[in-house]
Structures are given as structure tokens and as C-alpha cells.
Image 1 (cartoon, rainbow, N blue to C red):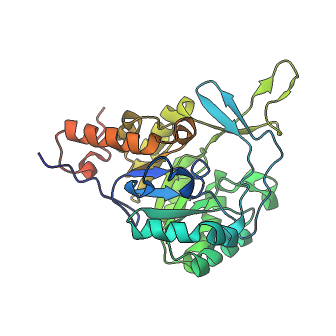
Image 2 (image 1 turned 45 degrees about the horizontal axis):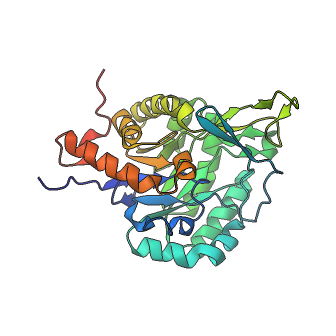
Length: 307
């Protein structure tokens, strides 16, 4: 029996298999080259970058919790120009090898998103698509996540859509996902990443202080996997554009769950921090699962969940 077709199309982002990486857990790709050939992955998503460099939040920025991690990194990044100067040559080479490079875009306001997208358009020919992180704190709107309401999410994509012909993948907050997904689709989003980390809190009971530098942070990892699977299923039924499943993927079975729920591709996040060689292992396990299902094409299993 020949190997199954694993190629997928994430809203115009051509991937030779469904395995992607989650922004913020994978640097800019080259950090993992000492462990394996990164080009074997279908795509990587770079750490989110804004128009200008951000210093991020004070330390401590991460802590372990039961079945997951919490972070309050604050999207520290070198800015778009810094990304291109430091990693552009590598990312171009990775793209040339057939691994799609998805560049995540960060901003505190609509104007900041616009400025970042315009810089990516000018400086990053290697970007197969842009992931718009609308789960950033929106300072201009009193600290609310831009993506927490349909109107707020739509406003960002409405401003960005005319400024690029590249596929726009939107990283969604874990709130009102069906309503927000429909609003994003209506404004021209090409695909959706579901979900971002969930706001959470961890207190050191001995010091009575937060285990992070701020009271709350983003929770990610296996503890939220099944919440993410449910949200992927809800969103996939609500829109006609593809979904990228994100949340607690530690094995090929976890990736398969997302695909059955309706995801076209799957991002590996916290697992990269546990074992740097996780992504190719998960890919191998996913291929084996597709073969076990007796199908010739992974696309035949997207949304194949039966109840």
C-alpha cells in the first residue's frame, strides 16, 4: 500500500502535511534545526512580531501547573525588521524547501496591526501567510482582548484585508468562538486558528503572590486540549473556511482528534517545550493513524467525527 496523501490547504497556505507549530513555542524555526530537519513539517508559525520591538513583561514569565504551563511573556519580540534581519535568510531557505512559513502579527491597536502587516508585505517574501493574533491585550480598548467580541475581531481584519493578498489566518481568543468566527469569515479571513491560551491564575500559597510577574497569565497544554477540540468542532460547523487546531497536542492521537473535529491542520505547542523533537514524532504517529483508518488521503478524515 502506498503512503497516504498528507498534503492540505489551509486557506491558501499549501502544506505538505497537516503539522504546524504554535507561535511562541517555536522561536523562528532555526532554534530546532539541531534536533531535526524542520522542513519535514508542513508549516511553522513564527513568534508573533509587531511593527516595533516589544520588551515583554517582567520575569517570572512562565510557570508549570498541573498538566500544562502558564505564561505572561507579553509577546516580547524583535519587531518585523528584527525578525527579517535575524532570521529572514533561514526562513527563506525553509520556504524554498517546501515548508510553509506563517508569520504571526501582533499589535495593541488596529493601527499597530496595519503597520506590522505593511512591513511584512515589504520585507518578508518568505511568508506563505500571516497569522493575526487578535488575542493580544488591546490597550486602546481598556485592556480587553481584541478578539473577544465579534465587532472587535472584525474591525482588525476589515483594516488588514485590503493591505495584503496573502492568506490571513486569525488566532482566536477562547471566547464566543462561533460568533467571532462568523464575523472574521465575513470580513475576508482565509482560515482560523482555534484556540489561543485560556486566561488563568496560579498563586504561590507560601508567599501569597502570583507565580508570574502579573496576577494572571495564559494557560496552555494538555489540560485544555479537550476544550480546544470542542471549540474547533463548533467553529468548523459554523464557517466554510479551514480551521487550524491548537491546544495540548502531545501525540498523533491528539492531532487526529482535531482533524476528526474538523481541523485541516494542527499546531504543536507546549510539546515543543517538553521534548524539542516532538513535532516530527507527532507527524509520524499521525501518518500511521491515517494508514490505520484505511484511507488514501488525510483530507477524507477532516470532520469525519460521528456521534
